[in-house]
Amino acid sequence: MMPGRGRGRGRGLGERVVQGRAEEQCRIRRMLDDAHRGESNCLLLHGEAGIGKTTLLEYAVAHAEGVSVLRVEGIESEMELAFGGLHQLLLPVLERLDLLPPPQAGALRAVFGLSDETVRDRLTIGLATLSLLSEAGAGKPLLCVVDDLQWLDRPSVDALVFAARRLRAEGVVMLFATRETSSVSGAKALPHVPVTGVDRQSASSMLPGLAPPVSEWIIDQAQGNPLLALGRHDDSHAHAAEALRLAEAYDLDHRAAHLRALLAVLAAARGEEEHARELAGLAMEYTRPRDVGRGTADALWALGLLDLGLGRAQDALAHLEAARHAVGHPLLTRHLMPDLIEAAVRAGHPERAREPAKQLMSWADDLQQPHFMAQAHRCAALTGPDASAEKYYASALDLHDGGCDFERARTELLYGEWLRRGRRKLDARDHLRTARELFDKLGAQPWARRAATELQAAGETSHPADAVDSPIGRLSSQEREVVRLAATGATNREIATRLFLSPRTVGHHLYRAFPKLGISSRTELADLLAS
Image 1 (tube, helix red, strand yellow):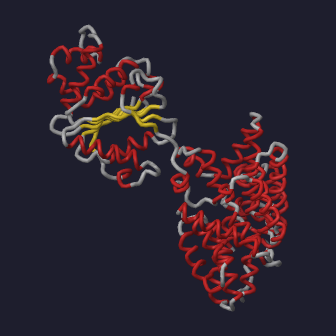
Image 2 (cartoon, one colour):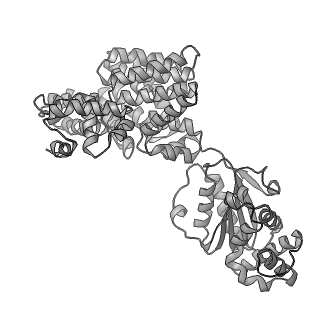
Image 3 (cartoon, helix red, strand yellow):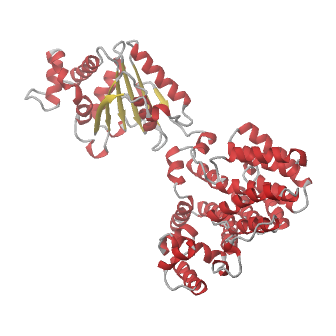
């Protein structure tokens, strides 16, 4: 058991919005306010692991201004230690035992091993717990926080539940958190609130900086569980690759197909044509015969995004329209709509972009999520009259602030292209330069090359890495990316995980790249790239 006592900090979580938990937060604040008026309350939060119960308990502690705090966390390995949890919770206030009626004080001393007295009946122990909590709250409200109740020993649970049900006007708040109410003795008798998954908008706000296809997949997999969503944010590429390996190992064919489609999208964004097509093809081998619409749509989306980045707008449009048709429910197409709209315009079919652009704007207005609104405004600039294009491009860039770099770079690129066509070359260069730098940083080589080409058309000299006589320019896109990561000190295995390759393939790329670069070891890479 993990004990603790202290004052509410009023900072940290107290100043931070806990995403998607407004109703629970309001109830907790109300309970704490009531405690200052001498009223007592108890509440049991229950839900699956990682769903946010502990975060709500921490929120309560952070808001417990002017309130004493007692807390304990159940540990599975100590479940057999009778009254161990109760002892840890009450340890900071045991000096008040003498204020209790002698039978009750004697009962607690006995169960805590502080005397040789015989352990009394559980009714006396429950009453003693109630009395001690009441004394601890005298003159100042008291918050008791009990986390992982399912792992607290049974006698402690019985005593705490007994006390919680009988609190009235002591100024005591008791908050419990557990995974399952059915496994905890007496827990069903407490007022309880199920802690369920957060909504998609709240989950999305926990994943800043990720490309929409990645964040959408993470939210789907997490099913509203904030811990899963945050756990998958750190390195989405590596997690998806690892998840695929696990799915294949355990013959989870359906999940593996979805993961291949996701990895195909990520590979497509980086311009890894062979890898993206292989993954998408493998995904559809499973999804098409079984009418798995979402999986098929994601694989087709990957092919469309790949062709769009490589400048094959007509092929991209065909794939993306097929993906839109395959997915089934219209709302599930929102992540691929910006690509479809851009493909239609670039392919010379703006009429096939107008209805999707209108639909995207409608969804963005309803959802009020910045990254969707940014995409919708970008598409409005693409499909609307020139007179309103600049307004929409500028607002899209504002909405991208702090969001996904890949999407921001695409908006910068389109805005720069529009400015160049309007003979505003100086203005165009700023946006195109930003786009190229962002694409370079992300390893999205086809998009970076397009931005570099536009920059040349706008009158800027070529990017050194694109020059034919540059050592870096002699490498293939895959070799260039492997070299870039190797220069940071990453091992072959780390590079392989990042790029979805085998360590042997990484070694092969380095073996081919070194002679082109005129070097013989990894230690020379950093200096070469810096120059």
